[in-house]
Each structure stands twice: as structure tokens, then as C-alpha cells.
Amino acid sequence: MMHIAIIRKKYLDRILSGSKCIECRLTKQKRAPFGQIKTGETIFLKQSSGSYRAVAKAGRVEFKSDLTSGRIRDIRREFAEELEGDDDFWESKMDCSYLTLIWLEDVMPTNLGPTIAPLQGRAWVTFQDVEIPINAK
Image (spheres, rainbow, N blue to C red):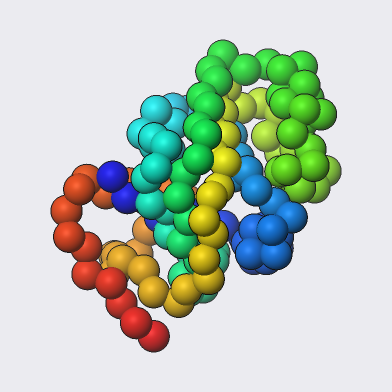
């Protein structure tokens, strides 16, 4: 499978600089990429309201469910250095139930990625193993 992750500019900049090496998705409902991504799969990193900026491979992947605010605080402490999430991010996620952690490997800058329809608020898209047209800007 292949994936598109929509990421805010400040976090994407940190991924490209190498200081952020884990992508974290905390959600209230079970939604992609929870349970849908595996080690070795390709992730196109697209800037929120912007263009593609990188492509990476999923390294280690972890899923956790039935989270509490205490468990989220523990996750923040354990992975703070690799996640680089700010206080606003963590405060906004204290009521989430599902967690996906993805260690990003082989991050390469690119402005190419799959041609897709507007995402209508979705922050992650997963594609089956099909050929996807890659756009060049």
C-alpha cells in the first residue's frame, strides 16, 4: 500500500531537517492510518494546504487504542524528542482514543506525488497496490 500524509508546515520542516523522525497520529475514532500501515510502505508527505514536499518509508509502526489522558501524557514523555510536538498539539489530543506511531525512514525531498481529488478535511489517505499517476509541478 501507499499513503499520503497531510502535515503542517512546521512539522514537515522538522521531518526534512531530521529532527522529527516519528509521525504521530492521535484520533478520537479509528481512522487511517490506524491499522492500515505496515513497515516498508511508502508515505508521500504533503504540506497542509500546499504541495508534496517529501517521500518516506514506514519503519517501525505501533498502534495503541483505549487511550486515556494519562497514557497520552506517558507517550508524550517517552517520545518527546523524536515527535517534537508542541504544547498546543498535545493539549488538543488529550481526549483521543487511538494512536499510530510511524518511524520515518529514507526521507527524501520531492515535489512529486499522486494526483488526488480534494481531501475534504482528511489528513491521511491510503491507496491499494495500484499504479497512481504522479504529478509534477
